[in-house]
Structures are given as structure tokens and as C-alpha cells.
Length: 199
Image (cartoon, rainbow, N blue to C red; front, side, top):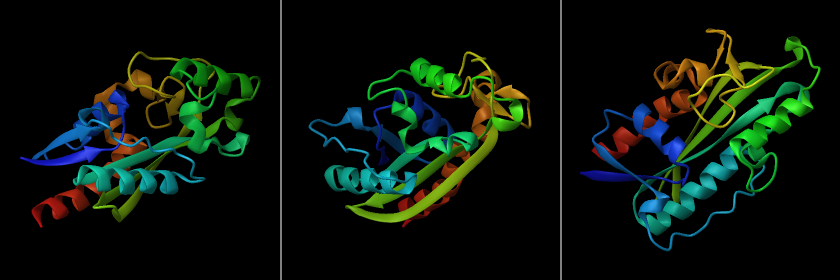
């Protein structure tokens, strides 16, 4: 069976990616499946920059088709922050709960009309150290006043889908994985990955 590498150690993210890419006849590996893999410093100013850097370095090291994801939350009233720093918004090793708490603190007192937000996911596909394709998916919504729901990860308990009037964490993976930013980006990437594997 052919193998592809998802350039992350985030088990939640890999779990979601595996579900969305279901149907591809491939074995999906993650960084934890390799020894002495280089640590990629995400110092880019854009999601595209970070995703492409990870894809290039990891594909060169693993000698496999590599899929790198960089994603995050952009809140309109905060000047599109946390953006590329979404996973470390409250500090370098901050937890999901700490990041959510900081976001709520910054939005304290803001009415719903000022809580517009967008999830962004950029997928970079690379092989042999060369980026072959970069795709993007976005999902608009609003930030709630308190965490709700027990599924998902990251900012899912705060991000309200306008279509359902519930947070991603309340919707559960079955629905979330049909409307999310990651689903939209991976749907495009899936076509590219399939054509590359077939070739």
C-alpha cells in the first residue's frame, strides 16, 4: 500500500484528516512514525508559508508524498488575530483551554456583531523537497461567549457555525467534517493526491 505523510504531531488533526481522506487507498503516517525527524520552526507570516515550509522539509526527509496543514482562526475585530499564531496564542506551549480563555478575554463585552471570525486551512502537497500544490479552505462564523460542546479541538468550542447555530464542538465530527475549513481544503487536496498516487 502506498504511503503519505501528514506533517504534524497533532493527533487530533491527524484523526480528522484520516476521516476526510477516507477512500484513498493509502496508509497515512504522521511525524511520530519516524525517528530523528527534523523539527520545523513555523516562523512564516502566512499559513501558505508555514504549510509549504513543513511540506518541503518533511518530504525531503521521509522520501514520501507529504501533506502539510497550517490552519488557524482569524477574528475580524482583532485585526485577524490569532492567525498563524492560533496554536500558541496564549504562549508557546499553551493548551486549547488557555488559548480559548485569552480569546474570550480579548472579546469581553463585544456584541455578536463584532465577533465575526473565519477559520482558515492551507494544505501544501510536496514530494522530494518540492512543493507541488497549495490549496486553501475557509469557513466563516462567529465567536461565542463561552465554550460549548464536547467534541473537536482548538477553538471548536467557541466557533459558531451560522448554518447550524451551534459550535463546531457541539456539531460533532460527522457534521463538522462536511463544512469545515479543513474539509474544504482537503477536498481540493484529495483530488491532487489521488492523481499523484495514480501517476
